[in-house]
Each structure stands twice: as structure tokens, then as C-alpha cells.
Image 1 (tube, rainbow over the protein chains, first blue to last red):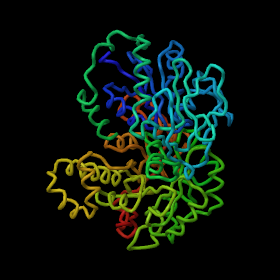
Image 2: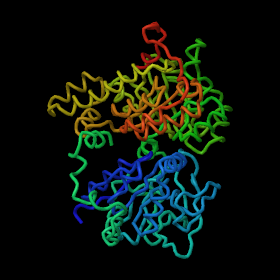
Image 3: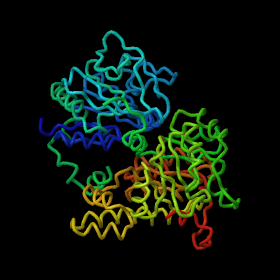
Image 4: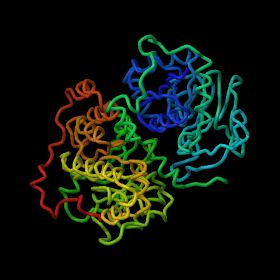
Length: 225
Length: 295
């Protein structure tokens, strides 16, 4: 599994930060801009950013169906903040869902505007006793979690901010901004267990050179992250 | 730790969430909806786009708070607004309105020719303009949580934006190549704090997100900025001064995502109608240039 690759949706948002965290745990993160980029990935991350922007770009570049298909096939996926919104079955302010795979009701900007963004420490029992530092930026919150949904973390006061349902992990906060690698490691473990590559496996599954040294373009991206 | 709001991580973090996106100038709630619908990751609420500010002359100030609030109610993406350089009371007012980011902007007429706003005193994050690395680091030292290269706003001419992003990027590369004992003099030459200079030398990048602004008016302009190292773009007059703003806005959003794919850039650039007319820089007198405001 040394050549495992995890895709990071790269429409808009903090995708470079996720690729950096993956690099820290020894996994190649692949930016996903077009359906063909999904070939050969073992897991997928939907990053933070603006969910309204990402949903439009996902449709414009025909990524909705292939990504939904991957998730339905059991490919592990992690959504953070806007990524969590994209994975929710019901969005409280009325927007249509994008990948309706998590049986949760999600409220966008649940804490208010930027002035209400905050940092705190959370306990995520699944990931150990050591508290997790969590950065919430114009963050959503889970207002209802269905019976099949495992609640992974709550704020003091009980609001749900991290969940898992089968192969889908989602957080309302940004582990990638806090030097936190445990969610990414969990995703990688789930991806290794799933052991079925994304569609169009074959040539793209051969061990690829790392992006950092692969091409001038790879260097440029790494430098600007 | 207990729960803390308005930390450096949340201020800088919002800019990280805007990366790879397009922030559009809007002057009405209707514009704001068009921008959001086209895929803008944030909007800049103001009374006049820079091209009109340039044409109108006179003193350009913070926009009417009623207009800013109307725009805040019209969209769910973050809303930014501009305060004059050094006008910390305009910034206090914008913070009281609850805008998501304040742009301490050279597009407005400066209120102070010696001091920028002490941005550490605010809970709301700030973005500031720069023309080179030293100016970027001075703004960050004052508390800016995001930087944009200035370009020359309201011209529809990319030439100054290219000059400024190149200056920042080559400044970073030059620092990264220095020995540690050379950084003290580098800090003196850049007129920037040593700690920030040393950080840039070590990491090879600015400590905050860097967008390009000032003159972007086509999808190709946006992609050029991105390929030169921008992490996203501001488009001011370029959208609502074009023939078909909704279409131009969508195309610039697509080009910013796919900035390194020329075939997609060709596709999204087709049939957009006329971009804004634009100004040749040589026709703008030194006194009428906006980028030289700020220090």
C-alpha cells in the first residue's frame, strides 16, 4: 500500500492543506479537477472552502456522478467543513444536497459570521484520549443525525461536529489547519481496508513518482500551498 | 484550551478557505447574487467599482453601511468591505456591521499618509495590498491576515498585477536562497521585521494567503495570475464593466480552478463578448495611480 493515493477535490478551497497533511503521513494526495483524475485513488477528501462555489464547479465539470458512484461503491471519503455540507442528505437552509450519502441535517454558518469563528479542544474518543485541537471557520453544525450515523465528537453543550456513516467521515472543523493528522490516518486505514481502487484502475495504479519531484507543475503547486 | 474567537488561526484560516477562488466587487444586492451564482467564493461590497471611482475623482470613502448590510443579507458567501488606509474608525464601523473581512484599500483615498491601521486591535480579519515582498511583510506585521498584490485597480490592464505578483514571488525566492546570516541585512533592505523575513526564508512562502488584484478582466488574466503564484484572484471592474457580467464571472471562476489546463481555458474563453475596455498605463498620470498609495 506504499503507493496509495488519496484524491482531494480541488475545485476551490483549502485542498493544498489536505495534500500537505497526507504528505506528512506518507501518502500522495492527488488534486481532483476532472473525472479522469479519480482513476486509481483509494480514498477521497472534500476540503473546506465555499460550498456554494464547490457545488457549482462539481456540476460544471461533471464530477457529481462519478464521485457519488465511488462513495456508493465504498471508497472512503472525508469531508471537512464545506466538504461535510456537500456530503449531507439535508441542508437546513434549503439548498439541494450534492452527494446525499450522510444521513444528517446540516446547518450552514451555524455559529454566525466570521466574527464567531473559533478554536477549541475536542475529545474524539474513536481517535484516542488526547484532545484534538479544532478550528471552526464559519462552520456548519449537525442538527440531526440518523440512526445509522455514529457521532464522533460534540462540542460542550452537545452540538454534533464530527460523524461517520460506513465509509463516510465528516467534520465541521478543520483538522488540516491544526497540524492534526488522525482523521487523515483513519481515512488511510479505511482506504487500505477497502482495498478496491477507484474506477479506471490499471495504468494509473502503477507506482507513480511523487508529485513533489514529478513535474515542474507539481513543484509549483507545492511551493504555493 | 478554552474556546477562543477571532484568533490568528481563524483570521488567516478564512483566507485559506477562499483559495482557488474569485472574489468579486459588487455594488448592489443584485450584483452580489449574480456573483454568488457564478461561483464567487466571496464578494467585496462597495458603492462604485474602481473604474467608476477613477472616473468620478474626488475623495473615495467607505461605502454606505446600509448598502453593505443589504449585500450581507443577499448572499451566503463571505462579504468583504473596504476601509481607507489608516482610517481605523471606518474599520471599527465595518467590524460593528459584522463583515467577514476588511480590505484596507488603496482604491479609496488614504486617510493617513504615515500610518496604516493597527489591525491587531480588531477581531475581524484584514486583507491589505502590496507591490512587493517588503510591503507584504510590513502589512502582515501590522496584522493583515491575507495579502493581495495591488495591480492598478480600475484599469482592466493586467500589467501592474503581473509586475507585483512577480516582485513578491521573486522576492520570496531570493530570500529562500540566502544564508541565515544574510537575513538580518535582508530584513533591513526589505524594511520588514526580521522574524517574518526569517520565516519566509525558511518556508519559501508568505505566512498568509496571497491573492492577485488590480486589472484582471478575462479568464486568461486570472489564469496568468494563478500560474505566476497567486492563490486566488480579486476581480473588481472586470466583471460588471464587461458586456455580459454573469457569463464573464462564470468563465473567470472556471479559469481560476483550471488555470493550468490551456484546453479548458480555451473552452471557457469562447464567446464571452467584450471585456471591459481598459486603460493603457502610460495614459495614467503618476498622481492618478492608486498602487503607490500605502508604504
